[in-house]
Image 1 (cartoon, one colour):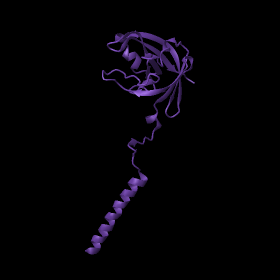
Image 2: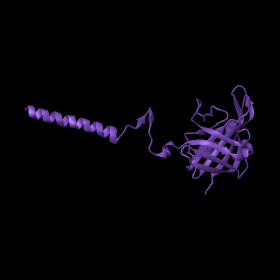
Image 3: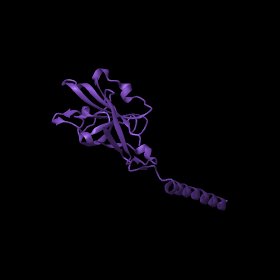
Image 4: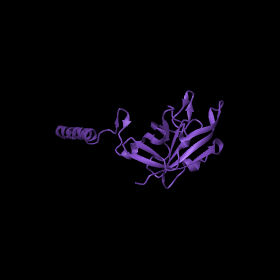
Length: 191
């Protein structure tokens, strides 16, 4: 009977150490320092920098979501732009949307001259894994804030678009909001 218990104990102990070896060495944890390790680069590629040579802009891109009102949030730094992380990623079919401030309390901000872009101008975006996307300006539109076409700017699309947004018009000191929006519509250049 003791031989059977010892044998069973050795088997259980062997299974226990085999499970530890399998888990630790053959399948390491998916988290390191609290961060999930992602195997697919598609899952981690997000916009990093935006360059518009015509305007002398090279800036960092912040990932933004929605503000407390449910609208697209804005970048925290007036020298940066914000990419709407719930929309399309650059290079994908759909509308990728990037917004930038027109000005700040101290003067012009990153998209102060956005409205001077013309059809044919180039916008270059680089993501966190080094992919470079070149977009060509197609058109530009100005909308009253209360008539902003959400579906047209943020909706689904069968092409790869990048829509750039900033403010203009009259500034309301109470709501801290401009009366209009400038949208520059660009499309991915086919190489």
